[in-house]
Length: 348
Ligand SMILES: Cc1ncc(COP(=O)(O)O)c(C=O)c1O
Image (tube, rainbow, N blue to C red; front, side):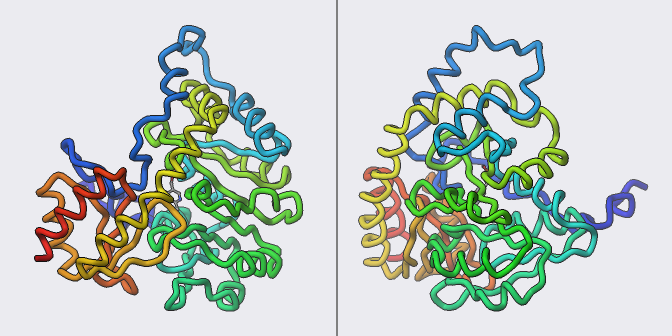
């Protein structure tokens, strides 16, 4: 009989990742851009007459890496691209960890890190954040990881970590330190320029959030050429398809859309937070395009009640340190009003 005995040992206890059915609901559960698809990317997709899809894409996305290098004032050899930054994260564990190697990460944070670490045979070491959701720098350094990985701004708590703490970690070790800036556009304090200074620093970025292109699956990391070379040997050749690469290049050249997306979040976050707090939620400070909130009613009831009203948010209420917490992507004015009205009905 076919069962999990045949599966690779490191993954036998795994469950498939979050995969809800949305059936037309308002998606405020995955921190994507609520303003709709990236317009420059859509234009690029509407003209694919020169896309030679009978041929493979460039093996390592040379065109996108060139444009990224111009954008950041770096060299194409400072970049590795992938099918979403999730692929980059997987490649990082594959590049730097062997069976039994420890990977250090904060808790609570993005759950895919421990998943990829374990999948690749490693041992995730989760170091609790303090009561302000800030890093325990000493414990992270003392944990003897073969890699350290930290999202800033953090998901799902929303806050960025103190810059001085992140610098202490990068300077306090020789092992690769990954700063995941999936929400970096919303924070304005990137570590990308520091890849010139620190050979062990890797910054990951995505086109899925501010860039409004999650469906095209495009991510990249910025790092020293030495690290990029190692990762390139591990990454699946051709993993970023040529259609997505073309759309990404067009999107990078249209920064107006990114600025208006970031402005929209900054303008609308206070209204959502005030509305929720008036209903008894406790909202945590956020530097991203979402907010974590402790619900005044049972988290499962709230998430289901909102789903029944056509609104999807993400439930974290079952996790340690996040008891009864849920996460809302910041919406447009209209969306936020709809969310607050629905929460009012449920909490009344
Ligand atoms: C912190 C963080 N890193 C990475 C990702 C993955 O993004 P991508 O769509 O580029 O794979 C996410 C997505 O939610 C995220 O929250």
